[in-house]
Amino acid sequence: MRTLIENGWILTMDEDMQEYRKGHLVIEDDRIAYVGDVTVHEDIDTIIDADGAIVMPGMVNTHTHMGMIPYRSLGDDVPDRLRRFLFPLELECMNDSLAYLSSKYAALEMLLGGVTTCTDMYYFMDRVALACEETGIRALLGETIIQQETCDAMDANEGLQLAERFITTWKNSRLITPMIAPHATNTNDGNIFAQAMEIAMRHDTMLTTHVAEMDYEMAYFRDTYDMTPVEWLDSIHCLNEHILAAHCIQVNDNDLSLMKRRNVSVAHCPVSNMKAAKGIAPVRDMERYGIPVGFGSDGASSGNTLDLFVSMRTFALAQKNRYQDRALYPAKEIVRIATLGGAKALHLDHAIGSLEKGKKADIILVNCDSPSTFPLHDPYSTLVYGANAANVSDVFVDGVHVVQQRRSRIQLRDVREALEVEMHDFYEAAQRILTGL
Ligand SMILES: [Zn+2]
Image 1 (cartoon, protein in one colour):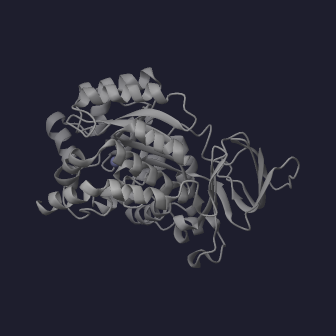
Image 2 (cartoon, rainbow, N blue to C red):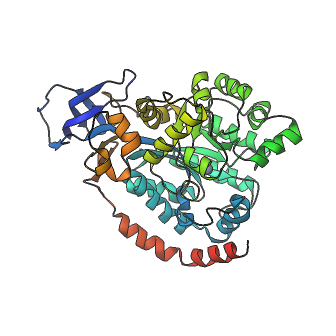
Image 3 (tube, protein in one colour):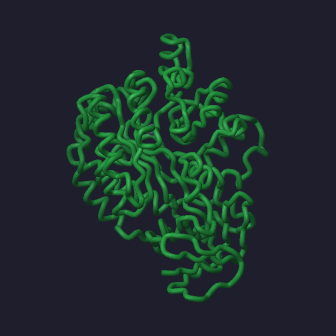
């Protein structure tokens, strides 16, 4: 099966940042067979006229919690929301059906917004993986391990067992890459972390966790160990190339130097970090050290939207202001982080993140026909400052045309109706817990 996309403004996002103003791209099965400016019409089964749209690699979301769609817009302004509100509600209401339908909704929301790969840590991960397979999104998924009772495990030991079983089950999947996800540095002790890392190393998977995110986390490590969370991870031999560290808002030069030496990647979540008044991560400094950084939307409870266009724009505003430098992070650089940068952070850049012959056909078309995307002088600038998820018209993942003319294969409305029914008890419990705060 060979599909030709023609008449698009192709942004390859390869190492040379090559572009083709009226380019041609051929998809053969699950791979890119050609990208360039020569007309190719031999043995083509389907032709798609991009009609001036931007053709680019699918975006990579390096941190989210797909099961948290029901929490969107709930208690947004409650201080210490995680411990006072989210954990109790999750323990009471989250179940496998809710996690499945929520993940399906989240996957569709991401695909419709041009995200072709996501990284998720949550519970009931077999159901999350099924939701990803059915919707057609590429995903790195890890069972959350935390030292307290959760909605799918009595304690961290059971969480570790679930996590390893999940890795074994989904190891050879086409779209799913299983990993392991101890919740955070301050919610697991060194022993649990070491066991999670042992599993990650034995199965050669990533380990993702929340790092240097909370004020109380920083105070705990300072008072207990006289260390930062990053130094603590290193002290227990859990800082290495398997780690994808989410947030890293409060990291100093010594942390960054350690992270570079240990080949750690970062999932940067500008929207959720700033919404919660946690600060602006020093991404310019991370990149100066050569640490791979990708964008994360975070869950719908924290970042509200899973739209990476919003992350790109928020990132630009935050970094320029943090460093008081208008020239910092030109739009082209920001689109690179959303695509190839994310792929590198996930160690998947050999397969995705840029449009190059031989790579997986994870491709999106961004149609610049909305009021704020005219005129199209600089496509990168339009993507970062003018476009949003609704501009995405077509999405391919692994060569499969999963969004056509802004319609996903599985209708978002159908999933939303099923989720609404499943949320019956959730609505009641959420109001009761919120009212009691
Ligand atoms: Zn998170």
